[in-house]
Image 1 (cartoon, one colour):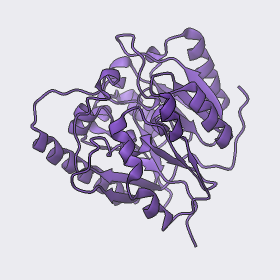
Image 2 (tube, one colour):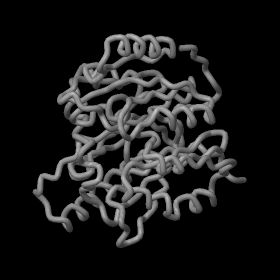
Image 3 (cartoon, one colour):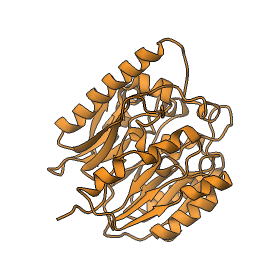
Length: 315
């Protein structure tokens, strides 16, 4: 794969998060997300209450660290149970491109109808809006930066195949973005395709965290290793057990002052060895927060809760 460095930045200090009003277990997605569990430990009201507490603590940690967090307060009584994961339905880009994506769960498609796009338009320039959601009529999907892990500096979209990550939609997206694709197979310990790429791997400015044991084919592992070496990313492997604790679901961001952080859940942090933590801290500072209820019932973690904003600001 030919790689080239661009003027685009890998990380941003501007992010969007959605404070949920109706968080809960989504039966539409449960068959394909092995990270999602309905343990019936909490009542429906308790799940919503605890998820909001986790959100407030997490977003507060990011704000206190100097990261600009745009918090969208979801309207009471909203239908979606997964709105806390906005990175699945949109992505934004430094050249002003805004992309909305086809979603597998019909219940989640209503998230695109929120006031988020008008809210962002007040502060940021949306030069072009690429609407990929028309692919839903063909029953093919691409769930944003859940389906794709982007190396923005080298314009590579890493994606593992699943019923939520269609190659035909990936091709259209990469064509518009000017990215090359790296499509591979990743499976859980049962041999089933992993639903989203961003639980398998994370790409930072100078490092990559990846679960090699989840990559199904040796040649793909070798090709991935070569791509990371070509783009000068130190490879920090995690085990399958650590991946199951969301250790692949991390995202690097920076503060308004330029300090960079790797954001993860406490579940993920506690799964790491001291050696792994040391290697990460050679590159960046770790931030973590307790997200156990959101992880259990939603099947997503810290990275899924953060939608990066790369759009240029309005004057």
